[in-house]
Image 1 (cartoon, chains in turn orange, purple):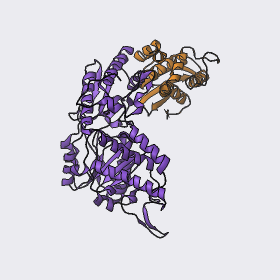
Image 2 (cartoon, helix red, strand yellow; image 1 turned 60 degrees about the horizontal axis):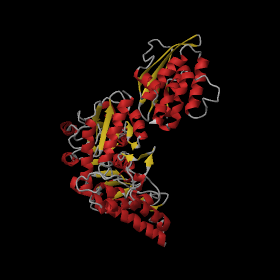
Image 3 (cartoon, chains in turn yellow, green; image 1 turned 180 degrees about the vertical axis):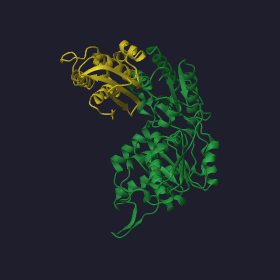
Length: 149
Length: 413
């Protein structure tokens, strides 16, 4: 189970059980839907962008533990950040889970999100971890839906 | 394998020796292959037959006068005759080779549909169909201005047959239904359903992908008009498959695809088509795969198949009981008549997480919607985990599945 522990770490299991910012934002000025047709994961990301800053961010939807925990920790990570900072995190996260960023040696701002580096060992699950980030990216850029296919 | 208690006087350990893939380890654990409904494994007989064909017999079929072409043609046609006997078709030319069940259904939807389905007509399918027995019919319905009518299912995952009878009428042009549901395991009473449709003069197209590997199929006894199945779910290579059709229907239907092989005379003004089965086999077919399908049938004929099917059924019942007794596990699909498939969910755990944790234990199951999104919607789940059995699986493997499911529950507790 050692490999498994890399994926299902306590923090991830805890966020899966108690996802943060798991709610709608009724008057969000940005939102997008993301879905993974392979497994049926579907979520909606809401962003309240004010003066170029993420004033509030939340998500709703259904998915596996990895996608839920990833979305939950994403909302924590980008809240209060500028749009540009959020986009940098999106890019770094994306690079990390596709093996194009070494969290030990490459400069990054991922912080707690580094926990998702373990997903690299589970190619079938990379899309689960990145779905919420793609959806955030779409919402920030006024795209309405995003699919991981 | 350690000795496993035999069921039904069926020597599973001996059978397992015929399937080399089963001896490997995955993630450091012996492979427990429970994804047979997605694709089954092939026996040494099939592997050796494929190698022999590629090494000694390969050429194009139905084309050359030379030795190899005739040899390949003979072997290809022998495979067709094998299929005929296995499903008890009247004539081998009623067994059209296609690349799988999906292509078989598309062939019927397109060819039968363009000839016989018109505006205002109705096509009956069921609520438990695989996407491959929904989408081709939707496409032809849209093209022809016809309507799709759907036989509902009940909470056990059984068809509501009274509703089926009510749906049949003079506008019904075809009924398309699965013999065995890939997501629920339900065995549908297709013989009775076909008889009912025939009272209205309506032909029936059966998706037999999950049935042929798990129960005896006799297309004449069923009186099926069309019966589609895939080789790769019945211990043959991918790319092999069959659409059986009654000669009287196939003769009236136009070709599905145009090309080589399916013609008699071609001029720029007019082309006349070949007879059956060539009319429906445009282009060079998957010769090696279809010969592999013939060999897979040889293999099935070489074992006590009835004992194998009975054994597999006991395995399904054993697994159902084992998983049902675990708190938090819910079985999706509890029909009285079931085959091979055990779909389940675990409370508060997404099936994808189940799939990954099981994989770490060397256990291969399918996690997802099983190409049956309407079924998932009916049971109000985004997806399920699905263990599906073949006669080479063991009770010990079922025990490992149950242990691993317990582990999933512990991880997510």
